[in-house]
Image: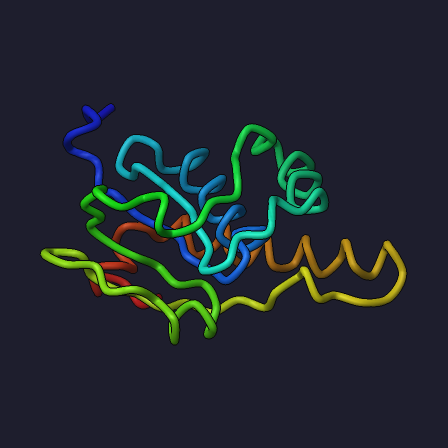
Length: 148
């Protein structure tokens, strides 16, 4: 396992830091902690959605200790990559100086899913699995070595 200083720092950014960025942080910590130091934040954080915690637990990943925070709370961290996981965050993404590279990969927002609980959870599971597939290809898909 690499030492912390050797890992790349990745910020997953979305609007509310409620679903998609939380899922991405969880998967990165679970699958790639040897190469990625993962963070998540939102443009306007609203708290971690309870369904997000539930679908990740179903997949064997405990994110119950993760918190929802604003991007301004992470000032001073020199990220290697900022990955925006929604179009709104991409448009409102603050500037990160220095070596920080921006990558955009939009996912549907399960927060706005409608229907029965079963239908809503199906959307959360689909997005969870899509984000997992993206994270599994990291860091190559961030550097252009593999298509995102």
